Amino acid sequence: MANTAVADPQSGLTPAQLAQRYGLRVAGERPPLVEYARMLWAYRHFMATYSRAKVASSFSSTQLGQLWQVLTPLTNAAVYYLIFGVILSQHRNVSNFIAYLCTGVFVFMFTQAAVQNGTSAITNNLGLIRALQFPRAALPITVTLIQLQQLLMSMVVLAGIVLLTGEPLTFNWLLIIPMLLLQTIFNVGLTMVMARLGSKVTDLKQVMPFVMRTWLYASGVLYPVTLFRQHLPHWAANLLECNPPLVYIELARHALLESNQENLVTSPTRLWLLAIAWAVVMGLGGFVYFWRGEEEYGRG
Amino acid sequence: MAEQTQPAGKIAVTDAGRIPTVVVDDVHVIYRIHKGATSGSSPVSALKRIVSRTNAPNIREVHAVKGVSFTAYQGEAIGLIGSNGSGKSTLLRAIAGLLPPARGAVYTLGQPSLLGVNAALLNDLSGERNVVLGCLAMGMPPEEVKRLAPEIIEFSGINERGDFASLPMRTYSSGMGARLRFAISSAKKHDVLLIDEALATGDRKFRARSEQRVRELRDSAGTVFLVSHSLGSIRDTCERTIWLEGGVLKMDGPTNEVCDAYEGK
Image (tube, rainbow over all chains, first blue to last red; front, side, top):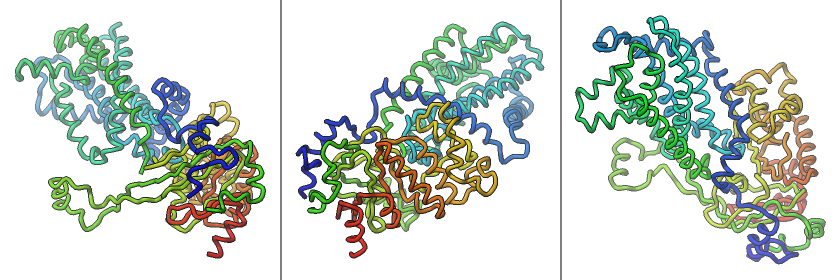
């Protein structure tokens, strides 16, 4: 096999030397982290267009079409209100339980969707991945952008519910913007972690609904978070109060619900610090974790 | 392999001073496939497997490419031929960086772009949106995409029988889908373009147009690889051909010589 030793008969170089001489790089090599982030930034138009197209086509097979963007969160809120507000009647010490519940449900659903759609962010886009080379992190970010657009719609619904149930419109409401920003960063990181895990462990998709339900109950969405303190040992309650969805939900309630200020799980300052910490840790950690698997996505 | 080093015709003459774009160095590709539901797929056997810590029986390793080496230069169009399962498509995917070689290495200039019949874009989106997304995903700036999008749809010819560009891609026939994908991928100047059977799917008119496009791409200093079972389109578009058989490089040389040998086997 003489052809394995010399790639170019004229120069007598080995293939590796020849490649180096002309600046060829190993195919599919993972770029350094900073370079990767820069490439990703160059793909911002792709991410924006893709998420818009996905949102536009998401209800294309239904008769009511985009109206479902509003109807889905409304129906969700109605179901939870029926069970936990009317039948089980948990709202002993929360004065405006409907608004309390809806805030929790909508904020939690943002993170829940990040996990569920993140798990399939790679596997659902194999066609694109196998056809074109681009930084794969664009896909989990797109997933988050899609969720963000749906969340903004739910937030409009939520604002309506909150005002209709008699809460005043205050300057505190502006705090919802930094809170959603932090949650979005947290979600991007979480989506990236789930995307990499989901691309390797295909069984994950079967398990996630159960994990998410457990997380829902641990996040104080359906009942007052102060219940944790009353029923759990001290350390467990402390641990649960650091739970990221719970932190973001409590911040949203702090911003929107004037009637709920004394029911907060802990001080707003502590909540903000936790929210920032989670966003930084998850955002950066998730990005690095996803980047380390860059070469594996879409391989057979 | 005398065919490769032999100074055969114009290839060897123009070799000196040319810039290599793809260097494939003794590449072995081994990939795992899921065989799907087999006799060993009952819950009990799955449990047994977990307890005894053995791999799932429905995964099998395939040694698809066994030590292939060659160098491709700028401006070349190279045909890849061989019988079914000889490792042609696998080799292309290794060059595109989508399958890691188990041994050896693939070096490329820039990012090779793989165009395959099976590589669907986004089926639930319209053809127009797929054009825009595909171009953006190849890293084109938005202004250029806006300028090129009508040309791409025009080239693909999907609007020849009514306004298909605004319909979701899942409503397209397989030929239309392949044509649109080829139109998108070939809209950008690639250093290395890998084409997997795409030229064979279109109708006669489209085939002529796409062969013309491949020639243009090659002239703009790119390298084009073409996998095809149609020796006709290989003879028409490629001047160099590599013959793979059973994952081993059997012959590498001018298209006419290799194709003749392949047909006379």
